[in-house]
Length: 294
Image 1: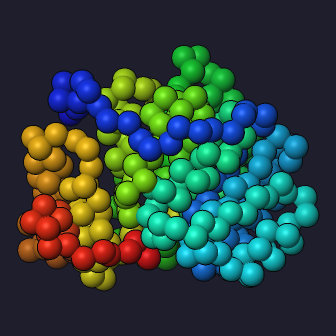
Image 2: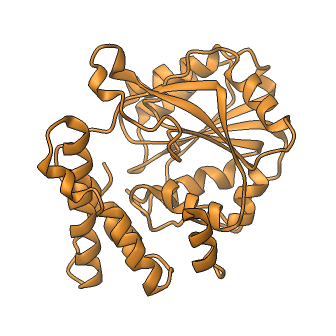
C-alpha cells in the first residue's frame, strides 16, 4: 500500500544532484563519509583488509568532512594492501548528501557499498557473498544486509532496530541504479539515504534483503533533538510537491506520542520525531537555523 501510494504521488519524481560519474573498472567501491573518529575508521578498514576478495577487485573511497585531517591521510597510507582514495571537500560541510555524492562520483565499482565508520563486518567473505547476491536472478538494484545492534550482546534492550532498515550504514547498490537516480539530494544533513529510498521505490527499483550478509552497528541513541531538526529541515527543503511534503511531515513526526511511554525505544523515537517536527516547521516558516549532522 505504501509503495503504491509513493508511485502514485511521485509520477514526476525529482532527481538527485549528481550528473558526472567515474568510469566503471572495478567490482566494488566501498564508500565512507566520516569526520574525526579515526579509531572507528581504523576498525572498519581492518575488516575490509581481511576480506577474501582479491584486493585488485575493490577500492575504498574515504570522504572526510570539515576539510580533512592529517590523521586520516596517514591512516589511508598505512593500509598498504588496500586501494584507498581520500577526499576532503572544502565546501558544504555537514551536508551528508553532498558528501555521499562526492564519494559516488569518484567510485569506479560496478557495485557501490556505502558504509559508516562505526559499522563492523566480521565475515571475511562478505564482499564475495555480496557479488553473488547481485548475480542471483532476478538481479536486484540494491542489496540490504541484515543489521544487528552492536550493544545487543550486552544490553538486549537495544535490539529493537529493524534489521533491514533502508540505511547507508551498510547498503549496496548497482552503480547504474544510482546513476539513474542521479545520486543523493546534496542539501541533506541527515537521512539522505531515506530520501533516496523514496525515489528508489517510486522508480520501481528492486531491493533484495539478504539473509547471508550481516553487519553490526551501534544503535541510534538520541540525547537531544538536534539530529531530528536537521533531518526535518532537509525534508522541508526538498523539491517534492506541497502535498507530498505534508505526508513527509506526518510520517516523520508520527512517533511523537511515544514520548509518553517508557523504554529506550519509545524515548529515542519520540525525541527524533519531536526534532523532526521542529526542524520541518521552522524551515517552512523561514525561521530555521543551520543544524549540522555531527
